[in-house]
Image 1 (cartoon, rainbow, N blue to C red):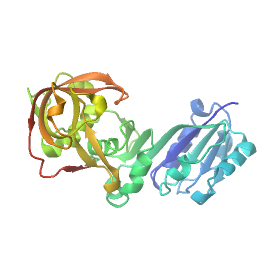
Image 2 (image 1 turned 135 degrees about the horizontal axis):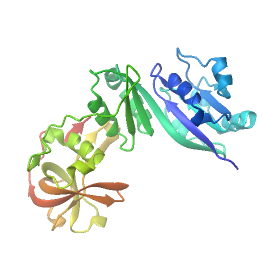
Image 3 (image 1 turned 90 degrees about the vertical axis):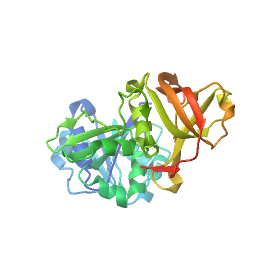
Image 4 (image 1 turned 120 degrees about the horizontal axis):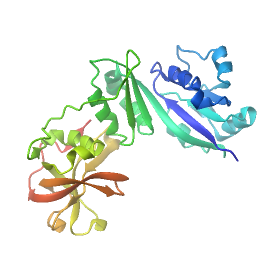
Length: 313
Protein backbone atom coordinates (compact mmCIF):
# COMPACT_ATOMS: atom_id res chain seq x y z
CA UNK A 1 0.00 0.00 0.00
CA UNK A 2 1.48 3.35 -1.09
CA UNK A 3 1.86 5.84 1.72
CA UNK A 4 0.17 9.22 1.47
CA UNK A 5 2.18 12.00 3.16
CA UNK A 6 0.13 14.50 5.16
CA UNK A 7 1.34 18.08 5.61
CA UNK A 8 -0.32 20.09 8.37
CA UNK A 9 -0.27 23.90 8.20
CA UNK A 10 -1.34 25.76 11.32
CA UNK A 11 -1.38 29.34 12.57
CA UNK A 12 -3.93 31.99 13.42
CA UNK A 13 -6.26 33.61 10.92
CA UNK A 14 -4.41 36.01 8.58
CA UNK A 15 -1.02 34.61 9.57
CA UNK A 16 -0.28 33.67 5.95
CA UNK A 17 -1.26 29.97 5.95
CA UNK A 18 -3.27 30.01 2.73
CA UNK A 19 -0.66 32.00 0.81
CA UNK A 20 2.01 29.58 2.01
CA UNK A 21 -0.08 26.60 0.91
CA UNK A 22 -0.79 28.08 -2.53
CA UNK A 23 2.93 28.73 -3.04
CA UNK A 24 3.60 25.12 -2.00
CA UNK A 25 1.00 23.75 -4.43
CA UNK A 26 2.50 25.75 -7.29
CA UNK A 27 5.94 24.29 -6.62
CA UNK A 28 6.38 21.52 -9.23
CA UNK A 29 8.87 19.77 -6.95
CA UNK A 30 6.13 19.34 -4.34
CA UNK A 31 3.21 18.06 -6.41
CA UNK A 32 5.03 16.46 -9.36
CA UNK A 33 1.67 16.67 -11.14
CA UNK A 34 -0.05 14.23 -8.78
CA UNK A 35 -3.36 14.93 -7.07
CA UNK A 36 -3.33 16.86 -3.79
CA UNK A 37 -6.24 16.90 -1.36
CA UNK A 38 -6.48 20.16 0.61
CA UNK A 39 -8.63 20.02 3.75
CA UNK A 40 -9.47 23.59 4.78
CA UNK A 41 -10.55 24.16 8.39
CA UNK A 42 -10.45 27.97 8.32
CA UNK A 43 -11.26 30.43 5.52
CA UNK A 44 -9.43 33.75 5.45
CA UNK A 45 -9.21 36.64 3.01
CA UNK A 46 -7.04 34.72 0.54
CA UNK A 47 -9.07 32.21 -1.48
CA UNK A 48 -8.24 29.07 -3.43
CA UNK A 49 -9.02 30.04 -7.02
CA UNK A 50 -10.46 27.39 -9.32
CA UNK A 51 -7.79 28.05 -11.96
CA UNK A 52 -5.04 27.48 -9.41
CA UNK A 53 -6.64 24.23 -8.20
CA UNK A 54 -6.97 22.94 -11.75
CA UNK A 55 -3.43 24.01 -12.59
CA UNK A 56 -1.98 22.17 -9.57
CA UNK A 57 -4.30 19.12 -9.79
CA UNK A 58 -5.73 19.89 -6.35
CA UNK A 59 -9.15 19.35 -4.78
CA UNK A 60 -10.65 21.14 -1.77
CA UNK A 61 -12.76 19.91 1.12
CA UNK A 62 -14.00 22.36 3.77
CA UNK A 63 -14.52 21.58 7.47
CA UNK A 64 -16.43 23.94 9.78
CA UNK A 65 -15.91 22.40 13.20
CA UNK A 66 -13.33 20.13 14.86
CA UNK A 67 -15.94 17.46 15.64
CA UNK A 68 -16.20 16.81 11.89
CA UNK A 69 -12.63 15.56 11.82
CA UNK A 70 -12.94 11.83 12.41
CA UNK A 71 -11.25 8.67 11.27
CA UNK A 72 -14.25 7.76 9.12
CA UNK A 73 -14.30 11.20 7.51
CA UNK A 74 -10.66 10.91 6.48
CA UNK A 75 -11.21 7.36 5.18
CA UNK A 76 -14.12 8.59 3.06
CA UNK A 77 -11.96 11.40 1.63
CA UNK A 78 -9.20 8.93 0.78
CA UNK A 79 -11.68 6.71 -1.09
CA UNK A 80 -13.31 9.67 -2.81
CA UNK A 81 -10.21 11.47 -4.07
CA UNK A 82 -7.35 8.93 -3.86
CA UNK A 83 -4.76 11.73 -3.42
CA UNK A 84 -1.01 11.33 -3.68
CA UNK A 85 -0.58 13.79 -0.80
CA UNK A 86 -2.79 15.64 1.67
CA UNK A 87 -2.55 19.19 3.00
CA UNK A 88 -4.56 20.16 6.08
CA UNK A 89 -5.00 23.89 6.67
CA UNK A 90 -5.81 23.66 10.34
CA UNK A 91 -7.75 26.20 12.38
CA UNK A 92 -5.33 27.93 14.76
CA UNK A 93 -7.94 28.13 17.52
CA UNK A 94 -8.62 24.38 17.53
CA UNK A 95 -6.53 22.21 19.85
CA UNK A 96 -3.86 20.23 18.00
CA UNK A 97 -4.88 17.11 19.92
CA UNK A 98 -8.25 17.12 18.13
CA UNK A 99 -6.31 16.35 14.95
CA UNK A 100 -3.16 14.53 16.03
CA UNK A 101 -4.93 12.10 18.36
CA UNK A 102 -7.11 10.79 15.53
CA UNK A 103 -6.35 7.44 13.97
CA UNK A 104 -5.61 8.28 10.31
CA UNK A 105 -6.36 6.06 7.32
CA UNK A 106 -3.79 3.30 6.96
CA UNK A 107 -2.15 5.02 4.01
CA UNK A 108 -1.74 8.42 5.68
CA UNK A 109 1.42 9.41 7.52
CA UNK A 110 2.16 12.86 8.94
CA UNK A 111 5.23 14.10 7.05
CA UNK A 112 5.59 17.60 8.48
CA UNK A 113 3.78 20.17 10.61
CA UNK A 114 4.36 23.79 9.62
CA UNK A 115 3.22 26.93 11.42
CA UNK A 116 3.00 30.55 10.34
CA UNK A 117 3.06 33.64 12.54
CA UNK A 118 2.77 37.35 11.82
CA UNK A 119 6.03 38.87 13.01
CA UNK A 120 4.50 42.36 13.12
CA UNK A 121 2.08 41.58 15.97
CA UNK A 122 3.44 38.45 17.63
CA UNK A 123 3.72 40.26 20.98
CA UNK A 124 -0.04 40.76 21.00
CA UNK A 125 -0.68 37.06 20.54
CA UNK A 126 1.82 36.18 23.27
CA UNK A 127 0.00 38.50 25.66
CA UNK A 128 -3.53 37.37 24.82
CA UNK A 129 -3.41 33.87 23.30
CA UNK A 130 -0.25 32.33 24.73
CA UNK A 131 -1.69 28.86 25.36
CA UNK A 132 -3.08 28.54 21.84
CA UNK A 133 0.20 29.72 20.34
CA UNK A 134 2.27 27.23 22.25
CA UNK A 135 -0.15 24.41 21.49
CA UNK A 136 0.59 24.96 17.80
CA UNK A 137 4.33 25.49 18.03
CA UNK A 138 5.05 22.66 20.45
CA UNK A 139 3.93 20.18 17.78
CA UNK A 140 5.47 21.88 14.74
CA UNK A 141 8.59 21.04 12.76
CA UNK A 142 8.89 24.44 11.06
CA UNK A 143 7.72 27.92 12.09
CA UNK A 144 7.76 30.81 9.63
CA UNK A 145 7.56 34.35 10.98
CA UNK A 146 6.41 36.51 8.05
CA UNK A 147 6.00 40.29 7.66
CA UNK A 148 9.17 40.92 9.65
CA UNK A 149 11.03 44.23 9.65
CA UNK A 150 14.23 45.61 11.14
CA UNK A 151 12.23 46.37 14.29
CA UNK A 152 11.11 42.75 14.79
CA UNK A 153 12.89 41.27 17.86
CA UNK A 154 13.79 38.11 15.97
CA UNK A 155 16.27 36.71 18.47
CA UNK A 156 13.75 37.14 21.30
CA UNK A 157 10.97 35.44 19.33
CA UNK A 158 13.25 32.59 18.34
CA UNK A 159 14.34 32.04 21.92
CA UNK A 160 10.72 32.11 23.11
CA UNK A 161 9.47 29.42 20.71
CA UNK A 162 12.59 27.28 21.01
CA UNK A 163 12.08 27.14 24.76
CA UNK A 164 8.87 25.24 24.07
CA UNK A 165 10.10 23.09 21.18
CA UNK A 166 13.84 22.62 20.79
CA UNK A 167 13.55 20.72 17.50
CA UNK A 168 11.62 23.58 15.88
CA UNK A 169 13.20 25.13 12.80
CA UNK A 170 12.51 28.88 12.87
CA UNK A 171 12.51 30.99 9.68
CA UNK A 172 12.08 34.78 9.43
CA UNK A 173 10.65 36.24 6.23
CA UNK A 174 11.07 39.98 5.69
CA UNK A 175 8.51 42.33 4.18
CA UNK A 176 10.20 42.07 0.76
CA UNK A 177 9.95 38.26 0.83
CA UNK A 178 13.63 37.67 1.57
CA UNK A 179 14.69 35.20 4.26
CA UNK A 180 16.78 36.45 7.18
CA UNK A 181 19.17 33.58 7.85
CA UNK A 182 21.46 35.45 10.26
CA UNK A 183 19.76 36.03 13.58
CA UNK A 184 22.31 37.34 16.03
CA UNK A 185 21.43 36.71 19.66
CA UNK A 186 22.29 39.63 21.95
CA UNK A 187 23.72 37.71 24.86
CA UNK A 188 23.84 39.28 28.34
CA UNK A 189 27.37 37.91 28.86
CA UNK A 190 30.61 37.91 26.90
CA UNK A 191 31.58 34.61 25.31
CA UNK A 192 35.19 35.78 25.14
CA UNK A 193 35.56 36.14 28.90
CA UNK A 194 37.91 33.70 30.63
CA UNK A 195 34.98 32.82 32.88
CA UNK A 196 31.40 33.37 31.67
CA UNK A 197 29.32 34.43 34.66
CA UNK A 198 25.60 33.83 34.07
CA UNK A 199 23.33 35.94 36.24
CA UNK A 200 20.30 34.27 37.82
CA UNK A 201 17.80 35.96 35.51
CA UNK A 202 19.86 35.10 32.42
CA UNK A 203 20.00 31.32 32.86
CA UNK A 204 17.17 30.75 30.37
CA UNK A 205 19.00 32.70 27.66
CA UNK A 206 22.20 30.80 28.40
CA UNK A 207 20.43 27.44 28.29
CA UNK A 208 18.63 28.02 24.98
CA UNK A 209 21.70 29.46 23.27
CA UNK A 210 23.99 26.67 24.48
CA UNK A 211 21.53 23.99 23.34
CA UNK A 212 20.92 25.73 20.02
CA UNK A 213 24.58 26.56 19.30
CA UNK A 214 26.65 24.08 21.31
CA UNK A 215 29.81 24.41 19.18
CA UNK A 216 30.44 28.00 20.24
CA UNK A 217 30.52 26.89 23.89
CA UNK A 218 33.11 24.14 23.38
CA UNK A 219 35.91 24.62 25.92
CA UNK A 220 34.26 27.64 27.58
CA UNK A 221 34.31 28.00 31.34
CA UNK A 222 31.07 29.06 32.98
CA UNK A 223 29.61 29.80 36.41
CA UNK A 224 25.94 29.87 37.31
CA UNK A 225 23.51 29.03 40.10
CA UNK A 226 21.29 25.99 39.73
CA UNK A 227 19.06 23.58 41.57
CA UNK A 228 20.27 19.98 41.91
CA UNK A 229 18.45 17.21 40.06
CA UNK A 230 19.61 13.61 39.81
CA UNK A 231 18.32 10.06 39.52
CA UNK A 232 19.70 6.60 40.22
CA UNK A 233 20.82 6.07 36.63
CA UNK A 234 23.29 8.94 36.92
CA UNK A 235 25.39 7.15 39.52
CA UNK A 236 27.64 8.96 41.98
CA UNK A 237 29.56 11.17 39.54
CA UNK A 238 26.79 12.98 37.67
CA UNK A 239 23.90 15.33 38.38
CA UNK A 240 21.94 18.04 36.57
CA UNK A 241 22.07 21.65 37.80
CA UNK A 242 19.31 23.79 36.32
CA UNK A 243 16.21 25.90 36.78
CA UNK A 244 12.46 25.49 36.58
CA UNK A 245 11.02 27.51 33.71
CA UNK A 246 7.41 28.46 33.06
CA UNK A 247 7.03 28.38 29.28
CA UNK A 248 3.28 28.96 29.15
CA UNK A 249 1.31 28.53 32.37
CA UNK A 250 1.56 26.66 35.66
CA UNK A 251 0.76 23.40 33.87
CA UNK A 252 3.77 23.88 31.60
CA UNK A 253 6.64 24.27 34.05
CA UNK A 254 9.73 22.43 32.82
CA UNK A 255 13.18 21.82 34.27
CA UNK A 256 16.04 23.08 32.07
CA UNK A 257 19.46 21.82 33.03
CA UNK A 258 22.80 20.44 31.85
CA UNK A 259 24.39 17.11 32.66
CA UNK A 260 27.32 17.81 34.98
CA UNK A 261 30.14 15.37 35.72
CA UNK A 262 31.90 15.71 39.07
CA UNK A 263 33.86 13.73 41.67
CA UNK A 264 31.02 13.13 44.12
CA UNK A 265 27.43 14.00 43.23
CA UNK A 266 26.18 12.35 46.42
CA UNK A 267 27.42 15.39 48.35
CA UNK A 268 24.54 17.47 46.98
CA UNK A 269 20.92 16.86 47.89
CA UNK A 270 18.16 16.89 45.32
CA UNK A 271 16.47 20.33 45.14
CA UNK A 272 19.35 22.00 46.98
CA UNK A 273 21.03 24.99 45.34
CA UNK A 274 24.64 25.16 44.20
CA UNK A 275 27.00 27.53 42.43
CA UNK A 276 28.60 25.55 39.63
CA UNK A 277 31.85 26.49 37.95
CA UNK A 278 32.63 24.15 35.06
CA UNK A 279 34.22 23.67 31.68
CA UNK A 280 31.83 22.89 28.82
CA UNK A 281 32.54 20.02 26.45
CA UNK A 282 30.34 18.96 23.56
CA UNK A 283 29.52 15.27 23.63
CA UNK A 284 26.90 12.90 22.25
CA UNK A 285 24.11 12.13 24.70
CA UNK A 286 20.98 10.12 24.06
CA UNK A 287 19.15 12.55 26.35
CA UNK A 288 20.00 15.30 23.85
CA UNK A 289 19.27 13.10 20.82
CA UNK A 290 22.68 14.16 19.54
CA UNK A 291 25.61 16.33 20.53
CA UNK A 292 25.14 18.78 23.36
CA UNK A 293 26.90 20.61 26.20
CA UNK A 294 28.22 18.58 29.13
CA UNK A 295 29.66 20.31 32.18
CA UNK A 296 32.90 19.13 33.77
CA UNK A 297 32.84 20.62 37.26
CA UNK A 298 35.82 22.57 38.54
CA UNK A 299 34.15 23.91 41.67
CA UNK A 300 30.74 23.32 43.27
CA UNK A 301 29.56 25.26 46.31
CA UNK A 302 26.29 25.10 48.22
CA UNK A 303 24.35 28.38 48.21
CA UNK A 304 21.00 29.98 48.87
CA UNK A 305 18.21 29.90 46.30
CA UNK A 306 17.90 32.91 43.99
CA UNK A 307 15.34 35.58 44.83
CA UNK A 308 13.09 34.26 42.02
CA UNK A 309 13.35 30.49 41.74
CA UNK A 310 11.08 30.26 38.69
CA UNK A 311 12.15 31.69 35.32
CA UNK A 312 9.75 32.94 32.65
CA UNK A 313 9.89 33.16 28.86
